Length: 398
Image 1: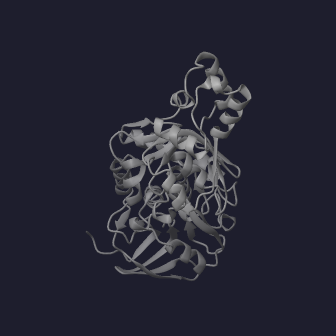
Image 2: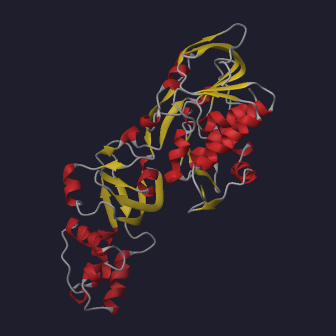
Image 3: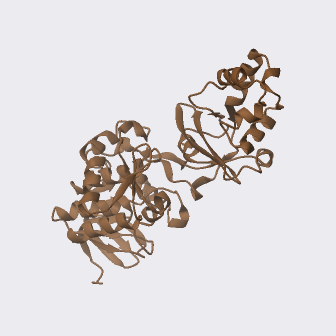
């Protein structure tokens, strides 16, 4: 490896999805780009994402798939570097991929393919990368530029890009360092919290569902303004699965979450129809056509219901019973927090950032990209697309 560079046109802190993409884009414009990361290897969150297959974008990416205090901010970058642009890059590198569900694109092989793509793009762009490098302090220079003191030496740069991510999954090296830099230069921060994260339940609730961990079913989860039709999974700590992860972005402490357990079906109406065709069948038997036997037992007990032959119920009683069973409303005790959260809600206030270039409006030459900003996507490849798009916006300007 060559000596540590003392100068760079563009210094990028963070060798994740956004940082590597930005280095490649800037380098191809002839800018000398240097990426620094305190971790021992690049792209750690990419490698573990999507169960090791990296859900690298979503076919249906649109601004509506993102949360921010400033919902218009993401529109410009997403319009100028779309999911189709990244798909073209994936195809250029010959990486096989497939759509799983709801427009989610995954590598056929492994997440490493996306990291290798980014590293290949950086090599072509002559961007340099250094890992195991701690940033000690950053000093602005006059009239422009920065002097960055690191554990490997001092670097002077014209443009400084913060691509440090959020607080999610600290075991992967996540820290609040990017927020510290934002504060140093006078930026406001939107309060952060864990998002796309499983719910935890209290001991009483966990005891009731002790037989269910590993069991899943399709639900519609509703909380606040959010509604998601996806799978829900019972766990030893509470509830997870895509429906729960999605709705967690809308949940606040103390909120109740309503789960429709037979989405698209009026359970009361369905039970009255079953009575016509199968009057001798027990309630638990017909419900087992919709849910596993364990789930049937659980929801009957939860509602204090016994199972009798359908002919013993009046139609009105079946309708009432159906509506009782169809909606399960509960108040989570909390979430599993940043330890397992896929992303961080909140971050650097985008009202103080240029939506065209990602440049700070408080400090010329300072840029913020990716998850460190107050832009958070839904589950399903949207956060990676924001990383690519925001990185491309900055890379074309730095």
